Length: 406
Image (cartoon, rainbow, N blue to C red; front, side, top):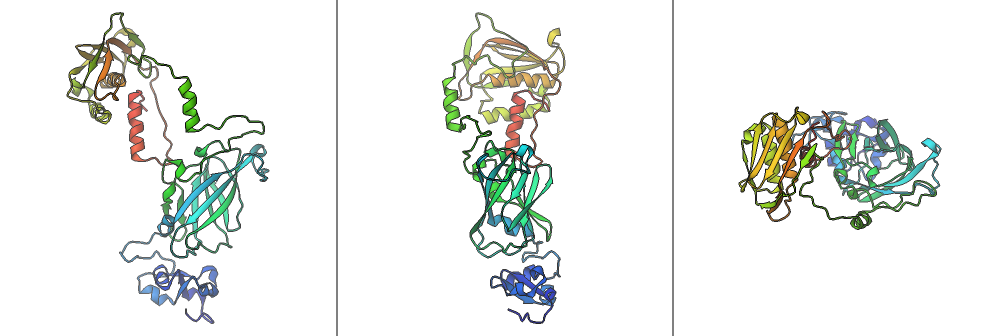
């Protein structure tokens, strides 16, 4: 190490080793040279060495491949977060800051998996919480509410860094009560104040809550709450007891304005469909074709589905309305516009059982349908909880099948 007896601390730069110090060029922490004497630190003297790498004090550093360093990305890949949902009652936590005097506990474990000691303290870990964080009970960390449900925790002055392959357990107190693992939100991310860079903590970048939340066991919301904690297993068991066999051959979601099935209506099997006048669907044709492909429906089959533009009975006349007649000879869908034809086709697809090795059973019927509401929407809030492209595409497919339009 360099002689630190008389030098100005601003002329010394620290890293986890000397090579790291040359690349990062971070002034000695806390403005004291003694920090560089820490055996975990490497140390170099003088701005000149940093200048050799094309940077000066407080500038972003060029990495060896010529790209700007992203300090957050140096830390986030070595972090894992795990949440242990605590108790709603009998936890001895101070709930005086909470609304109604209610609070619950969590244990937040931050695991550092890096091979080298990480001593920088200019980072924050941001996360969204549906419940306000009241307390962070650890001397090395503190929290601050940003806005809405966004909060961050950051190191305090006593933080000595992350030793290689260690875990830090941080007790938290949050407002109100917990209900389920989904009280927590995914996609925690690191922000580094040195360059304002950001990076998501990988094990939280998921829609599978168990990747960063331990199984939840405390569902008591009041002292006398006797509700049984619901799990996937016992919910399935309860639902299994109320299952009733029904004939779904004429069930369409949402329920059409009118369904006409005569006493002599026949059931018949088909092994795929083919469309006639599909161009009348206009731009919606691509989405309809894509949905058939995803469902595995043979598009060169024996049952013809014909589209027609035309007038409709007065009681259903209007935009997005349709009639559909299903017979053993084929299906005809009539609408006043492309949207109506598309909705009719979604109703037809909804009648298909695509789980029977290509064989699908239909029933003769006539459907008259119109929208009950002009705007039929579904909201996906990704402001704090980003969803994957795959999840959004599946949502759009479901919206189409249920005739949502916003």
